[in-house]
Image (cartoon, rainbow, N blue to C red; front, side):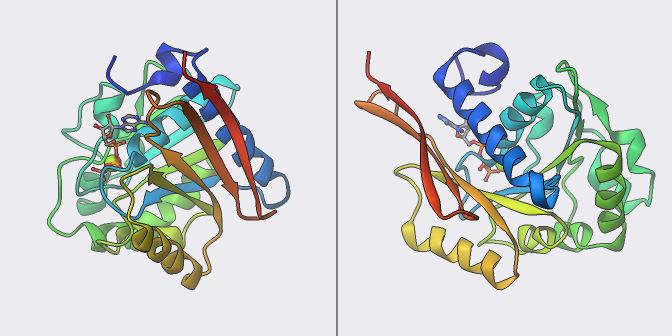
Length: 235
Ligand SMILES: Nc1ncnc2c1ncn2[C@@H]1O[C@H](COP(=O)(O)OP(=O)(O)OP(=O)(O)O)[C@@H](O)[C@H]1O
Ligand SMILES: [Mg+2]
């Protein structure tokens, strides 16, 4: 099976369990600070940001909450593919044409998960995601949904994610196991630290299940403890 909405297709798998652990942690950190608007990013491309957003959203919805995914990776919108939606219109169109974003929010096959697709790739993504309209929209939707998850491009290469990070309650950094360059990962963290953004945690993704053990790490920056959530021996 292609790695996609595993939380939907294989609810009992260790990976789905790992997403539930991530959900619990995100909800746990929200007790004090009402973490509700969360941005997901990574240092480099293809580390698994979009899949993390989609599976975390499904997992949150499975716990009975409403979730809106905003696909703010206007350079490479992906959420519509994961949920089988049309991307002819979406966030980019609503921002460029000053249209009401609400008419582009789509229901998905997963009860509780709504998606605002990225829409056609615009020439000026950073300008659009940094616009006042975008800021206003994020504020508004946070009152309508229990949780808002924002998918973004890699934070080092372009400014979009750094701009958006300032509009959310916290950020999750996705790191691709074995692929991520340590220096880049540190740089991503430095960028967020400099902006004063709260890093809710880091997800170590793409751990090779064929090797002896599979670990899912969630690093909770608020209590400085590294928790190992899943240890799955090779069968
Ligand atoms: N845990 C995983 N195990 C195996 N493959 C994965 C995993 N997570 C993601 N992938 C694969 O890695 C690729 C990139 O995933 P995804 O699109 O989620 O990454 P991304 O960080 O959003 O990429 P981009 O920077 O292009 O937006 C996809 O082909 C996806 O199927
Ligand atoms: Mg992506």
